[in-house]
Image (tube, rainbow, N blue to C red; front, top):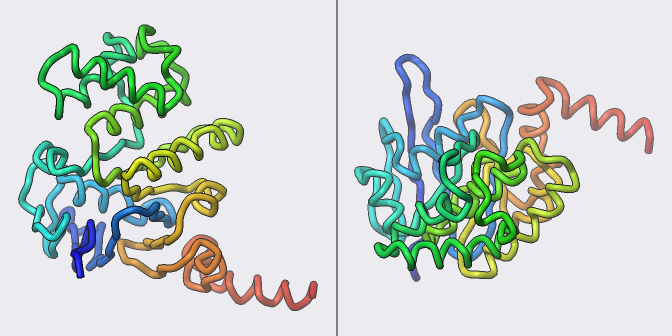
Length: 252
């Protein structure tokens, strides 16, 4: 039996007296789209920083394709096939959209002309082909989100970590990006996404992990997760699951 694409085993991260990630274990197999959700401050982005190498776990193990990557720097993990986007999108404002995407492409393509050609191909996939020569500083929020996605995709990842790539978008813009993420998966890239837009989680993810106070409190299909009492309480507060159940009985 082949090893999972990503395996996180009892990973913890402590910042001084704060335990941001607390003994998290999860497994991601190749080929799917997995969601990571939870209330604000749950530790989702911190877990992403551990997987992508921008922070090292205080304890625990992170393996990619069966190889322990816990001590590797971010660029070495990227070379292995782990790419991520960031919540706060910061393009190189002095460069064009094409040149921004080429920054990611240079990981695999040393020659400038090859990197720029790769950038053009990636721009088609994310809907930025008509903005290639525009300055990145002039993009809308939706455009910047697509650029962040394109730059990560240009590294030709095996595993793509999407950190709230839909945050700040209106419902129409969210609907436009969902098919792009589906197409990325069809292209052979496995996706792990942190997301608050539940419409997207429900339509994209086969499996969802729920993080609260640094710990995984639930795992399952999106429909099962939305009915989980622990999840409801994590989002809505103590006693919320019981109140909702009572309301359903009263109305039904």
